[in-house]
Every structure is written in structure tokens, then in C-alpha cells.
Image 1: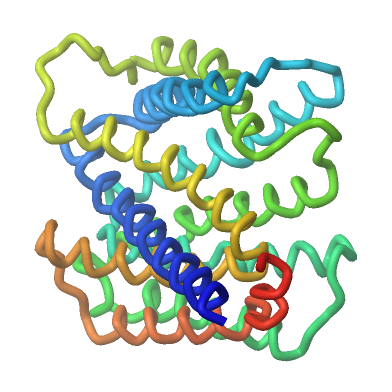
Image 2: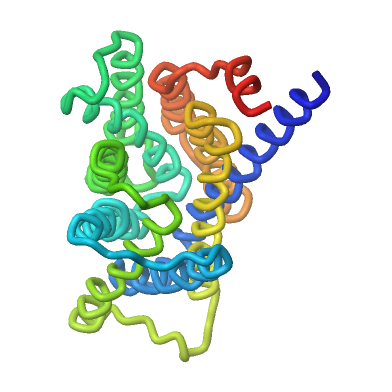
Length: 306
């Protein structure tokens, strides 16, 4: 019994820590765009630093790449759906929306993933989970529609652009569930996808004039890019560990601390203030997550990992 309680404490405390760190990348992203850095330049250094951090982990594990045509297509798809497209629209939106609002928008990933899974017949339709999706959509309307919700009502269009990111994350999660090749794992997949993204984003950053010179004097935005990239790599590895330790159903609950920490860290460190509409949207999106995500069977999880 003591062993089960200890495992439960480790699982829940780890999930909280991972969620807080993950949520911290949202205000850091806001700082990264504060002096005009553009998406391609930011994505490039994010994947470069991610490759370095994940490469150290894989090197310690003795991992060696074994490329096949199927794996190459898979890694390229993840690079586009999980990094280039969603991060591009996220950074574009961060330049116009508060980080706390972006934290709420990112929380819609499980909702998009559910709708896509049902449409692709990877999951059965559930009335309660569909209601959760509608509640999450209502939260986005509360952010974008009222003239008093955003600091600048003319920025409401960027709420729609920001939703492209969680949509593609939802597509990515279903693609991974359906198309993951044998002999791959999440850490090596992210490493290879990030490695390939360097050769896709690098030329685009240079050609578009969005290159960020790492040898220029560093200020808060450059430090934020580096910190966000490293934290993202750490939390991704931690998330994979959490799934192995507590099970996949338990792991998805990390969405709660990610959203909440993203909002409140933005208040504390960026001094952001929100209207009542935004706080109501936060409550709605959390309630929507409760309905969308599967229930945790803690008894089964503890017995499975005892």
C-alpha cells in the first residue's frame, strides 16, 4: 500500500512540475517576439537547440538512426505538423495576443484531436466529449467576439490564426497514433523531425531575412528563445517518461497545469491583465477538457505499474 501511495505521489508531483515548466514556455515565447523576431528565425533556433538537447539524451542511450523510406516520410510529416506549421502560426499570434490568451487557446489541442479522431474513425463518437468540444469552442468565441475581451479588439482575427496551431497538433497526434513506424520512439522521433526541420526552416529564415544571428549581443528575447527551446525538450522527455510511469490516460492530464501555469505566469512575469471574458473562457476551456479527456482509472494504473 505504501509503495502504491509513493508511486501516486511521484506521478502527480511530476505531472505538476512538467506542466508548470511547459506552461512557462508560453510567456517566454511572448518575450521572444517582443523585439520583432519573426517565426522562421525563432523556429530555426528552437529546433537547433532541441536537436542538441535531445541528441545528448539519445547519445547516452546509445541510439543510432536506422532510416527507411517509411520513417523518413513519418519524420517529415511530424516536422511540418508538429513544428513548422503550428509554431509558425503560434509565433505570429504571440506578436499580437497576450501570452495568457495563447495558453487558453493551446488547451484546445485535445478537443481538436478528438474531433479529428472521430472523423477519421479512430475513436467512437461520445456525446459528453462532443459537448466538451463545444464548450471549448465557446471559450474561443468569448475571447474573440466581445469588444472588451482583448486589449485591442482589432486583434481578434489572430485568435483564429492561433487556433491553427492546436488544430495541427491534433492532426499530428492522430497521425502518430495511426502511422507510427515500428522501431521508433517519441524522443528519437522528435529528434529526427527537428533535425530535418533545420534544413527546411534554415533556408527559409535566410531567404526571408528572418535569420537571428546567435553571435549578436543577447538580450531578453534571445535568452527567452534559448530557455524556451531547452525547457520544451526537457518537458517533452519528461512527458514521455510520465506516460511510461503513469500510463497514457494519466499523462494527458498534463494539459491542466500547462494551461493554468501559462496564464498565471503571464500575469506574474509579464504583468498581463485580463477582462472577465478571458477568465470565463479559462473556466470554460478547463471544463471542456474535463469532458473531452478520458477518466483516470487510478486503481488500474497503480496495479499495472506496481
